[in-house]
Length: 66
Image: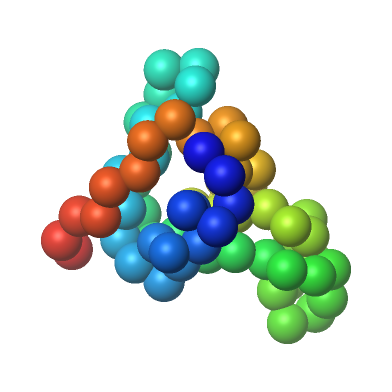
């Protein structure tokens, strides 16, 4: 999946299907830069809880209620 498609889901509860077959659910966050504001998480990565990944690892995304 390309980054601009996944950015549409930032701040929403989502279910993500990864290319390795795993599935994760939760609030999607994006960290644009390395700073204290983002708890020094890796820049240019998406996060669900503490699980960080890049957009190209996501095969499919869907918004869920929650």
